[in-house]
Amino acid sequence: MEYMNLNAAMKLLGINSYTTLKTYIAAGLPVIQVGKSKRISKTAIDKFMAEHQSSTIKGDK
Image (tube, rainbow, N blue to C red; front, side, top):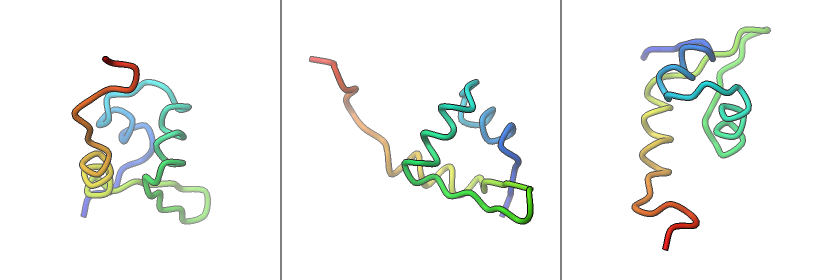
């Protein structure tokens, strides 16, 4: 399993905002923390994105 730091996870997700990453984490994206080191697995990102896939965007008619 591949683990990455938060910056690498943000790059993989295509986001530039740490606030957006925190929103994903609050929505259930799992983070592994050992001491002060935080890591996210690529598998967890793939699963999280698949679980949150939608065919519509809120606000669209």
